Length: 587
Image 1 (cartoon, rainbow, N blue to C red):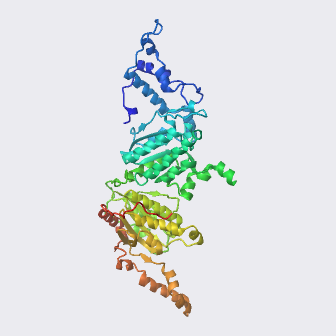
Image 2: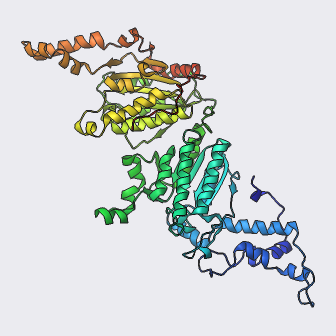
Image 3: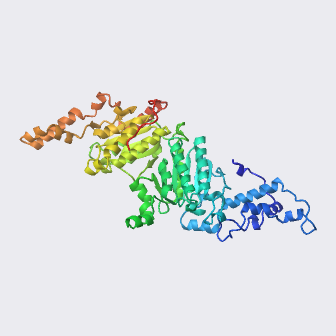
């Protein structure tokens, strides 16, 4: 509990009247409120300098020359403090609150109430005010300076947060505003607890000039310093423009709300002026754009309530910092449950399509998993779930989208997810059913080599427990990249219909037996025969197991039990890396 929030006995009516001028204990003049004269004193000044009725009696008002002043007692001062803090918490007034609601957005404190366990949020620097002058700022000095900072509990675990108040300066960042954010970010790093930012701001406070820009620099530096140290989650609940957009992109996960949140470096007006393109805020940087096209948003929701509920759920899956293991739960789902449904969900024919999500649901605890970047690069599924009560990260090819092929976006998506899991001690389970990397001029020219290497680097660099399961096919370089034994996975399992090869039998036979097929009297019959010969010789389900590249070929219905046993064995895994400052991963 902070010094601003020590519980005190509530003052009685006479004490309240003595300590706070005006009706109901609220001063009539509040700097920064609509229609308030520039010369109006701040609430602290009004509360301290203007005596109430009880003070007038105490000093002998109306009874001749005044006697010596009577200093206020501690109870009176505490009453003034309580009224001042209540005023600061109320914000700029009901009109501003109604305007926020008309935009379809909650107020800053309504959001914090949804994020934290009831009654646990502890605010710091409630009474902070800016000290800037010029452009009328000296006449508008509201408390909090447009950002609320502090900590509380989420499902009983400590979490830090800062939240913009759009009602004050449009949530724009100035020097004092930035310093409050710097402080809570430093506290989160020091205490080793997650940091959640609730973003609803108009960017830098232009009236404060370079001081505002420097404030952003301090935020970015702390984002990077805390990366891989404590989980950082950005929740976009309004506009986020210009330099402000870079802080969320440096954090681990970005949440957005449809229709009310936007992110862009340059807004529609600038785009129109420079390029002549006409575009709306939503078309340029809305939730759907960043969820499906840019890949900035990991999660997108229809309203703030469901968004913040999902933030709370995500936090329950993550450790507080990189020195801890993720929290465990006692599973209701039996750890030895057989997954008979898998025998019907995954067709044996390698070219037949199916949805990998029901497969993941069948394997994990209670069928519950949280998919990351669901709408972006959907040909690979990345999800957080629990197996035997332990948090795991699942990477799985999605055969129902582009046959589950790896391309540039899928490689980037999976690589960052693997890096996050490795940073926070989350074991990795990779479900492989991949025909290879996507061929094409566009992919090659856009850097599939470089981006595919990101995924390779991420897996090779990961020190957490890593288990691979080959469901059906695993061809070419994509097989190697998806956590094969050759790049360091701890255990590799395969289902009995698996095919591991340089390429599919049809393509391989066409290359190896090209001349023989061309010279045959019946090329098609010869081709068919040679394909089957190649498959029988090099692509049978036990070829990799015979060479030690697969640890076991398992009954698909045993997949859940096998994975839980393997992860339990690997729970205490430790692998020391080489002495170095850091690697130089592909960009």
